[in-house]
Length: 326
Figure 1: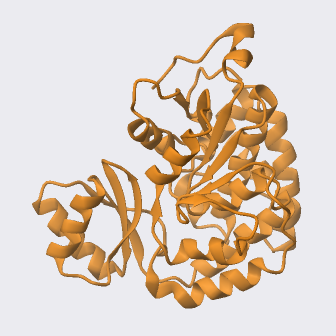
Figure 2: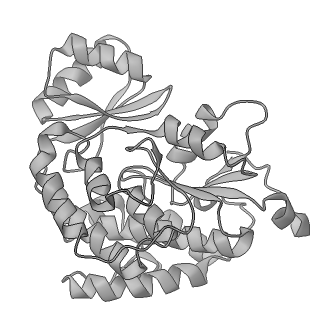
């Protein structure tokens, strides 16, 4: 864990330019969020965000999430996954937006944001494209669509080229490369039998393979019909111009004013995400620090590997760092 955060009154002047990183699904901890709220100075941002989210949660027939997530006995991953459809997605969305707001209050508005897969919804909300309420609705709409996306996702402990080699050796055309995290981590998507075959080939090659605890597939070309349904749902909400650049790991660039954002968001269901490309592009803003706006540190770890040059700025995952100076 990195602990080189500036201390005392100099920290704001040291980190006056930042980039916020919004992770996808699979790295959320309600316990970490609750601990950060009770132990650090980010509580007001979290309560304010979840107050708005819970209005939509009730509107959509879900239980209010704020009291559940932020209480003394927050749900575990399995309990949250077994809750009503959309509960885990709204929890991650709310946490990401709240961490962004707390960081913006302490260290200033970021120069740019990076969205990875599902994290693009929170990134666009942080940039002012969506309100918190409509961002919550979009997150729930996607959760409903994902519930009809068969298959799953598996994490491979290898680089993109090696992952493609494993897919070729497995001879399973239904399994595809879904996410490139960094030079040590990729994700594949496909039907369960195809994933099992690739996982066996990986094990035989000495490559770590772990099935993600997500009951759906994503970033797979077979989900074209679901992507059209999701794009149509996003078109129901007003979209404002982004106040800061939003880099997409799926589009592999910053969004432009003339982009069809509903279609671009829906691309996350059918196209792969390439995280290193988005990180390197965001680094062109020459930030003093990268912050992960989530409860874990997987995206921050990838950023450290991708931006490993001696002049790269520090990367922090504030909620995962017990001594982070809020």
